[in-house]
Amino acid sequence: MKKKRRISFSTVYLALGLVIIYLPIALVILYSFNESKISSVWGGFSLKWYRTLFADKAMFQALGNSLILGLSSSLAAGVVGTLGAVGFDRVRPRSRRLIEYLTSLPLMTPEIILGMVFMAFFGMLGIPFGMGTLILSHTTFCIPYVFMLVQARLVGMDRSLAEAARDLGAGERQVFFTITLPLLLPAIVSGMLLSFAMSLDDVIISLFVTGVNVNTLPIKVYTALKTGVTPEINALCTLLLAATLLLVGLSMLWSKISRLTGSGR
Image 1 (cartoon, helix red, strand yellow):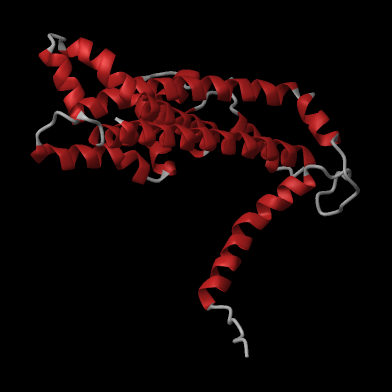
Image 2 (image 1 turned 45 degrees about the vertical axis):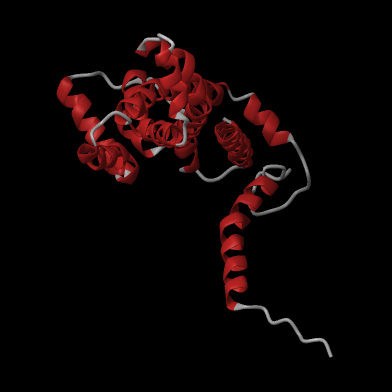
């Protein structure tokens, strides 16, 4: 006789957790194609709210600000995080733990605290709130993503290549730009993509440091939700989710390329 398979508690717990996490996302995607204006009532399949979204100029202006902010902060974080990781690789072992802790501190600090700190800091220096303060703030919490990925890449990198280049007469600058930087490029791009996704998604810090004339997409969505969830917001959330998944997928692809390149070398 065949034994009956019993469903374990861990399987039920995992399934329940997945339903709780992904069911609201699935409902948002489903009701973004709802014909009815009332989200709780299904009125048939329609792309009307996507057309309404693409006709909203204020929403696209906020999207443009978010793209400028994300690109600027991810590029700045890529430069600072890469240089920091390369410099950290040459630090004495006694100071490594402290520097590594300080670098990852923005990731462990609640965003509301970071937002208040940035607001007080910029106000104390007299810096006007706007795109400049947004870029500085987003760059700060994006640097650790680049730093950690580049640092992990440096740990697994073959040091004999740089040593061979020095033996052939190459200087430190030439070794960095011809040997080290090309090997670090997959990790740098992966960290910048993650930074862009985190910048595009941020609401709390942006609320504290933005100006009255600068509106980012997450802030626009947040203010629109105060009057109730509309199918237009559902359509926007669906597009943002697709963009975030695309960026995460590209980041994972770059990380895989980085590992394969490192193992091949």
